[in-house]
Each structure stands twice: as structure tokens, then as C-alpha cells.
Image (cartoon, rainbow, N blue to C red; front, side, top):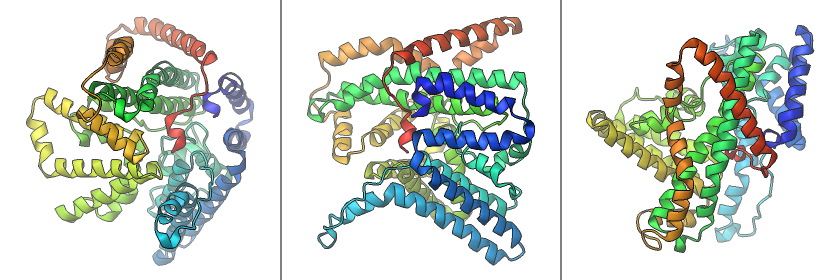
Length: 465
């Protein structure tokens, strides 16, 4: 994929930025739109038409919602049409084979065969964004966009098109019409992009090799410590991989004048699961809260209804991540934990020592990542069993070897998962920061580039969602 290639890093990105900035102001919207389509078409040329269809459909639905706003019943129907079209596309391309495969287990439907349709990259993200547009227009949270090119820029905005963060229309509606471009903002975007690149290349890819070893290990050979070491490695990999992509997206957006909301806020320092999900993949949590949980009634209709809403939202959240039973179980796992915290556990955690609350959260999250990381349900449950003594003993020489080999990386990543580095940098005098930050950024870019030159293809984990 584009983001993981040297060609994109050193040819396409500079060319795109040059085209954008050397274009007259009145042409920048159309230039950006073309650039977005080229970016997406590079990875998925056949599915550009699908994204254009989604763009056109929601543009029309938004115009109709605005035109017939005085007729609430009719306006609601257009919103419903938008939801049906977007969810229909998502269901067909992402979930149809899952349902066919499971239906085929029933003797009456045994002749059904999967269609084998490739999943369009980014469809889980851009369908949610286009749905948010018509809903925001209906709620009067954002003005209707009458310029289809500007709306196309929103849908296909290349920095976050493939894997988020999910940008709600109301958060960038004004920026589509007018946004700030400055040397300082551009430099800040470059800095943020390089930080994200380093997270992916230097941290996520490195620790991902350890997870690959344990994921490939037959479950009958997994030891307890080995299973924990492997899934801890994945916990770091997915954090630095996905937060790295989010940083790169935010940085690229800033380079062309956009400001996206933050998607991560040091989730591994959380002291409860409730807090963890306020810090992890913030844009997805916000989307589900505003467009699903609150419309269902949120916590306004009593405890039982609140728990039902939590259950529904998290079942959908889990299934959104993939057409596999393990993702649904992962979502329900968190639904149960969040209900328990809302019922009584959160009060206890707030009174408990910080260390206890923190350890509780990390253990729960790491177990959750085992459910998330292994799609085959039998293998997934066997892996979790090995974590709790159901494998090939407690430890082995190979576990000690891998632990010692990766210990420096694990320590670096544990520290990098906290705001310690930012706090230390903030204590430097202003003049010291002006020298230290550019030097560090240049060094990080140099090392990251060296790793990229020698790297094999290694896409971002969330590309598959």
C-alpha cells in the first residue's frame, strides 16, 4: 500500500504537496480532489468508482435533507436512505462472505459458496464519515455542502482515508471552505508526520516480529510466559502502529491546512476500562457515542436500558472491526466489563491504589488483544488458555532468549506509551527545545528512512479493517 512504500514517501508525497501549494488558491480544491483519487486509486484502482458513488449519493442526500428540512418526516427518510446505502455497501463488501459461510453450515444452505469479493481499502472509515455528513446536516450541526468537489475532498481526504481517524463532517466543515496555511503549521505537520513514521517503522515493526513468532507457534507448544510475552508484544505493536498512522494522518492534514482531532491519548496509562476507551481510537468511540449510543437513549432511560445500549454499541463496535466471530466476542467482552464498571467496579477502582487500578486495566486490555489478534476462534481460545496455564508448561529456554533479546525494546515502548518524553521535553528552556526538537526529528527521520530502505512490505494493521 502507498503509505508503506519508499515510492510514496520520497516521490508521491513531495509531488502532491508541490502540486497543491503551487496551484492557485481557486484551484486547490480540485487539485486536492484529484490527488485524493490518485492516492486511493494507487492501492485500489477498481474501487475508486465505489467511493465516487458513495460520495455522490451522500452529497445528493445531504442536499435533499437541507431542501426538505421543513418536512421532518421526509428529511428523516433521506437520512435513512443515506444510512441504508452506506451500510448496504459496507455489508456487501465486508460481511457478505461471512454470512454465506455461516449459512452454509446449515444443511438447507450447504450449496452456498462465498463470493470471494476483495474488501475495498478504507470502506469501514469513509462510509462512517459520509453517514455522519447527512446526520450532521439533518441535526443542523453543520451546513450543507453545495460544492460537490469540496464534499469529495472531505470523503476522500487522503491523509486519513485509509485507516482514520474518522473525521466527522461538522469538525472540518469550515476548513473545507477556508483553512490556514503557514510555514509554522506546515513545519508542525512535518514534525508530527515523522513522529508517526518512527512509531510505525522503529517501534511497531520491530516488536511485531516478536508477536509473529508467537502467533506462528503451535498452541500445544505455547508456554504461559511465552503466551503473555507474545500478546504483550502485540499490545505494543497495535498501539504504535495505529497511533503512528494517526500521527502521520494528523501531520499530513496539517501540511495542507487541516486540523484533525486527536485519536489517541496515552491509553496504556489508564486506570479503568472506561478510561481506556476514552483514550484509545477516540474518533471511533466518539462516532459510536454520538451516532449510535445517544440516539438509542444513552444513559437517560434507566440502568437496564443503559446496559442494553452498551451491549448493542459494543457488539456493533466489535463486528465493525472485521467479519469474524473473534471480533464480535472482543466487543462483547468489553461490553460486559464496561457494564460491570458502570454498575459498581468503577467506584471501587477510583478508591483503590493507582497501581492496582492500572495493573487491572493492563491485564484486561492485554487479554482483550488476544481475542482481537487471532481470528480463528479455536486458536484464539487455545492461546488464551495457554496464558493461564493450559499450554506446554510455565516457561522455556526460548522464552528467556526472546525476553532478553527484546527487553530493551519493551522498556523503550513502555516508556514511550506514557507522556514522560513530552514532559521532559517541556522542561527544557525554550531555546533548548528550539535546538533539540529539530535535531531529534532529523535523526529520527534518518534512522526511519534507513529502516524503510531495508524493510519488506509491512502495511499498517488497520488497513485490513
